Image (tube, rainbow, N blue to C red; front, side, top):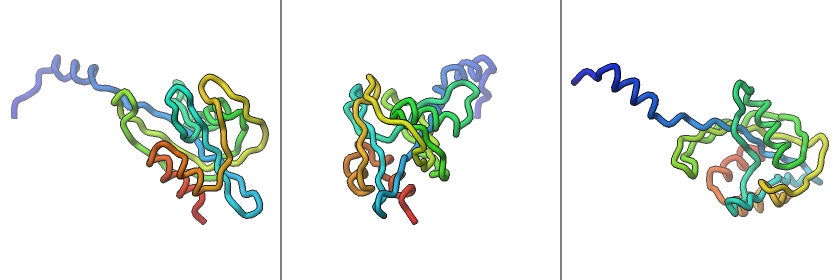
Length: 146
């Protein structure tokens, strides 16, 4: 095993792509015993997904999740419980870790933006079928499990 000069180690550390950290929510409501989930459409990617976004510097995970959900959906929510994390490569090939929480709405209403142009409330199975990414489907299962 050869020793790596300090300069090489420092250059490698600087070149390493940092992990993208994000947070989001699975917004649920129980309308007449049927759990419905909010899913959003992002026109820039033409995909259906769950509301989420990157953490701001120094921001707590829960705060980021609530902020991103409100920014993307117009809905102010309360966190019910943690759903864990998902890790994957983002569209730019960077490692991304997203922390998710199950949430319920306390106020607000959806209005389309450039980032999110549509929100649908769907039964859990229908929401899972519409989602563009398999990793989002896992969260629907976690959020709606008894």
